[in-house]
Length: 349
Image (cartoon, rainbow, N blue to C red; front, side):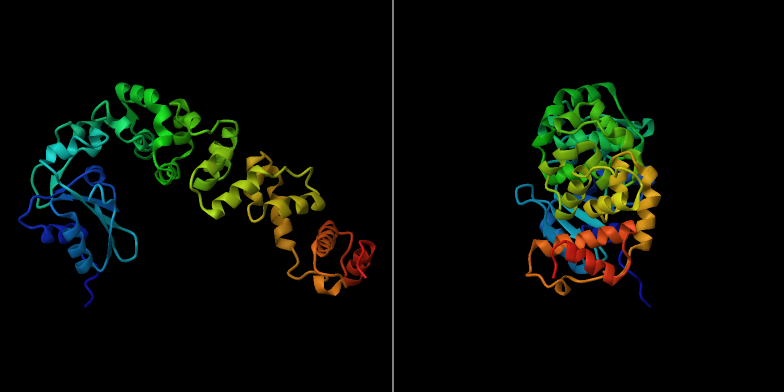
C-alpha cells in the first residue's frame, strides 16, 4: 500500500534526532496562526548535510541558497512545499535576534518543547502587530520594508508606531534590495497593500505612482496590479519577456474611439491577447462586451493568404492582409473575390 510522501516535519526531526535544531521564522508564525505550512524553515548545525539527507529520503531536490550564508533548500516532489535548512550559529536567541519582525523571531525545538520567544512575538501575533526586532532591521535588509507591508496585507496585521516610523525613514533604501526579491513581494500585494506602499513612501521610491490607482480593482491579477502601480518603472525590475509584452501592450495602447467593429478590431490588433485588461487600464470596460463579441465571431481562416497576392515577400503583403482583415471585421467585405479586389486596389496583381 502506498503510504504517500513523508511528513516533512517528522522526517526532519528524524534526521536531526539528538541534535540541536529548531523550527524558525515563518514556519512557527504560520503554525501558531493555524495556516498551512508550505515553506518550512529549520535552523541546524549542518544545513548542507541535512538537506542532502532530507532530499535523498523524501525524493526532493536539494540546492544551495547562498554560499555566503550557508543555507540549503529542498524542493519536495510536486513543487508545492520547500524545506530550508539554515545554519545555527551561536545560540538560538542569537539567531532570532537577526530576524526581521517579532512574529518571525519565534523558535520551536524540532523535537518538541517550549517555544523560544525572546521578543514576545506570540504577544504580537495575538494583537496582530508587525513590530521590528531592532531599529537596524531595514538597513540590514531593505526588502524588509516591503515585507512589513506584505505582512499587514496578507495577515491583516498592523505596524506598531515605531516600526511604521522606521519604514518611512528608510523608504529610500527599498531599491537596494535585489530586483527578483522585490518583484516576488510585490506580486503578493493586494490593491490595499499597494496603496499602503504609497502611503509609506515606498511606491514613490520604486518609481511608481497612484495615477491609475482608481482602476486597480478592475482586473484581479498580480501582473495587472504591477502595471497599474509601477507603469514604466516596472521595466526596471527583472521581469519576464511575457510580462514585459503585457505591460507594453497595455501602456502603449490607446482606447478605442468607439465601440464600432472597426475601432474594436484596431484596438485588438494592438493589445490581444490582453484587450480586456487594456480596456480596464483605460477605464473603458464598458466596451468589454464588444471585444468579447469580436473574439467570438473572429473567422478561423483568412479570406486570402499572402502567397496569393502575386507580390514579392515584404511589408506590403502584411499591410494588404491587415487592410483586408479590417474591412472584413468592419463588415464591408465578406468574400474571397471582394478581398482580392481590395488587394488589387492596394497594389496586388
